[in-house]
Amino acid sequence: MHYLILLIIILLVIYLPQFWVKHILQKYNQHDEKNFTGTGGELARHLLDRFDLQHIQVEVSELGDHYDPVASCVRLTKDKFDGKTLTAITVATHECGHALQHAAREPLFMLRSRLAHLSVWAARLGSFLLFSAPFLVLITRAPSVALLNITGAFLIMGFALIVQIITLPVEIDASFNKALPLLKSGYINSQQYPAAQKILQAAAWTYVAGSLASLLNFWRWLAVLRR
Image 1: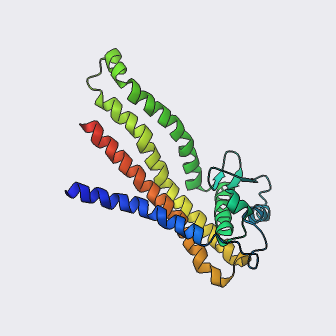
Image 2: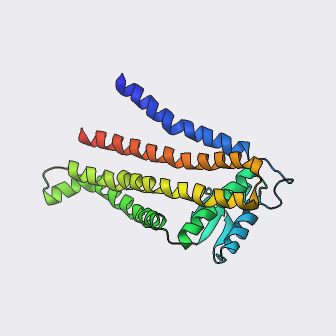
Image 3: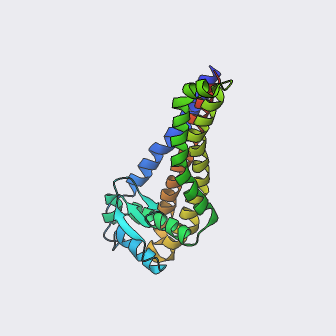
C-alpha cells in the first residue's frame, strides 16, 4: 500500500507540471498586434544579430522549440515563429539564451552538449548489451548476466538521467540569467513581466518533470534487474 501511495505521488509530481506548463503556454499565446510589432521568429533574428551571431539560423520546426548547437540554429514551432504573442516572444528569447551560452562556451552548456551526443552512443551500446547479454554470457562464461543487464540499463537510463540533471541548471540560466533580463531591457512592458516569468518558470518545470521521469524509469529498471 505504501509503495502504491508513493507511486501515485511520484506520478502526480511528474505529470501535473506538464498540464500546468501546457496551460500557461496556451494562456499567453494569444495574438497581440498592439503590444508586439514583431513575431517570435523576427525577435530571435534580431537578438542573434544584436549579439553578432549572424551565422546562427532561425527556422520553423515541427519537433518543438529548441536550439541546435550542431547546426547552429534556433528552431521554433510555427505558432512561436509566426506568432505575435507573449509566449512566442518569451520562448524565442529563451532559445536565443542557449545560443548565447554556446557563443560564450559556458562550461555547463558545453558539458551538456557533449553528454547529449554521447548519450546516443551510450543508448545504442546499452541496447546491444541488454539484447545480447544471454549470448555474451555463453561466449565469455561470465558468472552472471545481471552485471551486463545493469550496465546496459545504466547506459540507456542512467546516462539520460545525468543529461537531464545537467540540463536543468542550463535551462534555468537561459531563462532567468539570459532571457528575462533581455526581455526587461525593452522588449516587453512592466505589466508583462510577471506573465513572462511564469512562462519561463513553466519551461523550467518541463525539465524538472523530465528529470523525475528519468529517475523513475532508472529506478524501475534497477528494480526489475535485481529480481
